[in-house]
Length: 436
Image 1 (tube, rainbow, N blue to C red):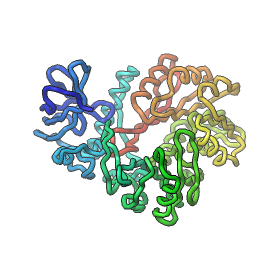
Image 2: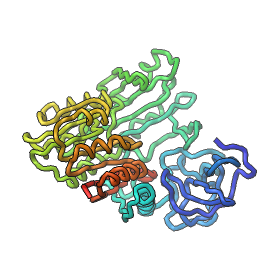
Image 3: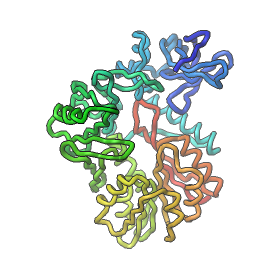
């Protein structure tokens, strides 16, 4: 929300990229975080958050006065900040790097990751951002999971960045073709507040309907009858985690490295179509788990990494799967029932580690965006594994946790960073830590 300022638009010279999809500029000594820019550009920007007492301001580019190399025409008109500004509107969030050539995006992400490592973990390292396996040259059509809001009138929409404003959409260029082929934009979703879509590698897409408060009970049935045949449909209540089948399955099936995975409802799965394979292979290559070893897979979800780790340790080894979500843990039990060397614990990671009495040779963790935190890091250290593998979707929380590990005598042995979210500021990484 914009506060009153003496000038709602200012001219700025753009500096370095910053974590979160912003670029740093200065105006009369004050830091301004600017979106939709490039380093070295001279722009006119509209202030979106400002105030005399604020430590910093936020702004969106509305006109490029002097463009920098690497700027291209945005592939998605609704997300194009310049086009939206010319019409007096905000752009759709979620494609904030779409105005940047793909190779330049990865160079900027590498700078951001290296800066976070240096600032938060005192780790000086050159970073290279790799594409996913089987990545398209244009970086489009990779999302297998998408989320839409519903605008007044019942049509699909998406939010502008840090705004409650809803912008109707007619397509989602970052989504795989199977999402767009559903033509959900033609459906009246009145009575629903949000629509989640999951498209598996094989099998029927799953559409989750999150009912609006006070919606008529018949609304879900009306919507379900309007969706394409062959589509699985369920209603989902995030507050109670209640999942009700309306048609077809309440889960989708994924396949990676010869393993099949059942992922129920709103359960977590990597959203890039090639991310599961990219990360699973990186984990196996980096950890070099041996037959007979004892491994912990923390924040294990439906078992993406647990299954190949169980193959690696064999029947003489053991894999401990720890997951806080009851639904994801139930999926893991179904996915891994044929692997007797796997023990599945549902509960908090810190408490599960504290109660575990066996030895651990290798620990793998894939925490949520907020990271693992100091207590979990200390408990991993107390287990004295030979190696720790850390999968992260946020360079800041990873760098913070790396600092905790380093304080306990660990070192960053290897690091790979992957561009699993093209045209956005997000990235994924896998690090191997060993005793210093």
